[in-house]
Picture 1 (cartoon, helix red, strand yellow):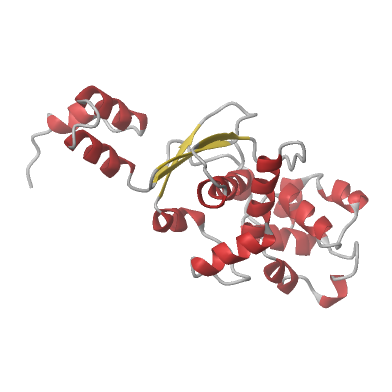
Picture 2 (cartoon, rainbow, N blue to C red):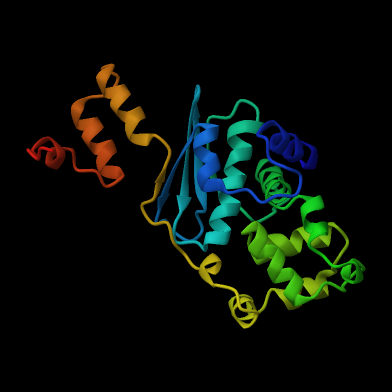
Length: 237
């Protein structure tokens, strides 16, 4: 998965160490993303129909987890063969589910490339279990990633063992605040956010007669747009 993630970055013109700003990147990929409050055990969903690509992300999860879920869904949309739809439980790294396991590692490699991680670690902390809390928080803030995903990545790189992993999973928000960082990354957000041309696509389907007017109105209501109110608005410039 590391090779696939690196190639994906290269194809999209993203450097080997820079962070990915997903909100500005998704439209370039032609992906429409909807953020909605969902049950806690449901992280997201991806749907692909021809060239149309959609993802739904659980806005009840922390922003860091949402970022990971988006990257996870990109595996389904762009890497997985013969993909149509998948309900995801991102971040579990469950070996029993091969596809989800691969999607998790693709997300980890995509969001946190090895060169980028190593460039942020002081030389004196590159030995096993020497990485400091301040460096850890700096990395997760730089890549806007979850603490758990970063620790799994560091363990894979041989920079920490499981005991260090366990120690650093505690007091995540407090550790960031004590080091002077904003805690937005560790809170939920993006409720009802829409990224991409969802409305444009829905309108095209309606204009082509692919969907009915009631279906079009329903689709727009899903993103908080009241068509009846717009059509009854007589405002003039």
